[in-house]
Amino acid sequence: MYNILLLGSGGREHSIAWALSKDKNIENLYCAPGNAGTSLISKNISLDILNNQELYDFAKDNNINLIIVGPEQPLENGIIDYFNKKNIKIFGPNKYAAQLETSKLFARYIMEEYNIPQPAFFECKSEEDIMSLRNQLGFPMVLKADGLAAGKGVIICNNNKDLNSAIDDMISNKKFGVASSKISVEECLKGEELSVFAICDGEGYKIINSAQDHKRVYDDDKGPNTGGMGAYAPAPLFDSKLRSKVEKNIIKPILKAMSDKGNPYKGFLYIGLMIQDDEPYVIEFNVRLGDPEAQVLIPLIKSSFLDIVLSSIDGSINSLKIDMHDSYAVTVVLASNGYPESYKKGMKITGLDKLNKEIIFHAGTNYKNNILLSSGGRVLNVVGLKKNLKSAINHVYSLAEKIKFDNKYYRKDIGNKAIKYLEKNNR
Image 1 (cartoon, helix red, strand yellow):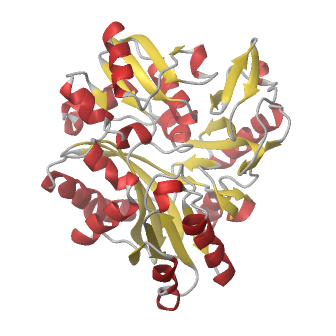
Image 2 (cartoon, helix red, strand yellow):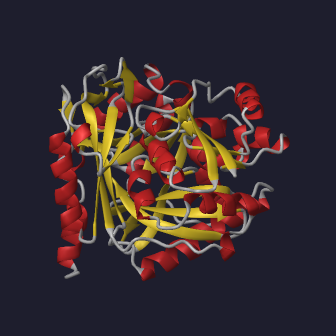
C-alpha cells in the first residue's frame, strides 16, 4: 500500500489527486499545499515545497513511500536528486534533465546538438543584442525568458512597438526577475500548435495523448500569454504520420541526449510543437504535465495513474499497457477578470453543489469558514467528456455558465480550432 505525498496546488494537482483517489493500492494521500478541491479527496498539508528538508521530515514522520511532483519549481530545486539519495521513491526528472524546461537556452543547445527540429534562436543578454537581430529575423519575432516565468515569459513581437515594450519588460523593468537575465530570441514559426505528452523511464517511453492548449487570455488567441485558458484532447491534427515524425525526430533523440549526458530522463515529457508544412518543430519542452492539459489528459486515461507513475520510476514502461477512453475531453478555465495581470481574490463561488457528478478541478480556491473563495487568477477548470467533440464543447460551456463568482472570465472559443480542422478534413 502506498502513502503518497503530492506536491502542488493547481488544477493539474487536483486532477492528479482525483485519479489517485480512485486507486485501491493507496492508503493515504496528502497534498502539499493543495487547494479547496484536493481537500475533499486528500489531506492538505501546509508545507514549503521548495524546502527539501521540511518535506523529508514530513515523509519520514508519515511513512511516505512515494512522492509525486506536480509543478516545475521543485524539480529545478533538485528535489528528485535529494530524495533519490534518501531512498524514497519520487516521480519526475532530476535537476539536470529538468533544465529542458527550466532553461530555454539549455534545451535549444541540446536540440541543436542532436539535430532536433526547432526554430532559429539566438542567446541575448542586452538590448543591443536583441536589436541587432531585428533585421535578421524580421517580424514577428519571439522573446523568451531563459528561466521559469510561470508560463508568462514568452512575448511575440509583431512590430517595433512590441519589441521595445518586450525589452522594457524583460531587461529594463526586470518583470520576470532573474528568469530573463538571458533571453532566447527566436524565429516565429507559423502553423498549428500541438502538445504531445509521453511518459518516460530513462530509456523507454509511451505517448499518452495529444492536446491543444490556448495560451492567450482572449478569444482568437489575442492578448497576453497566460498559464493556459483551456485545452482539449486528443488533437485531431496528431495523426499516425505526424506521430511517427515526432517519435523519430524528437522523442527518441531527446531521450538519447539525456542518456548520453548521464542523466536519463524519467517522468512526463511535454513537447510543445508548431506544425509548419506538415513538419513538427519544438517550441518548448516541459518536464511535467501541463496545466490545463492535465485536466483533459487524465480523465481520458482508463488505466491506473499510479501504475503509470511507478513504471516510470521502476524502468518498466515498455511492459506497461495504457488504456484510454475513446472520447474527447475539453476544459475551460474560469479565471478572475484581469488575469494574468492584476485581479481580485476572495470572491465567493457558488453553483458547485449542483454539479457534484461533473468533473470540475479546482485551481485558485480555498475554504474560509466553510465558504468557497477564489484565491488565484485561474480559479476553476470545468471539464466536458463526451464521445463527440462538439458535445464535449457544448457540455463544458453549459457547466461554465452554472458556476458563479464576481469578475468571472473565460474564453468562449476553446476547441473551435479542432472543429474547423475536423470539418476541413471531413472527419
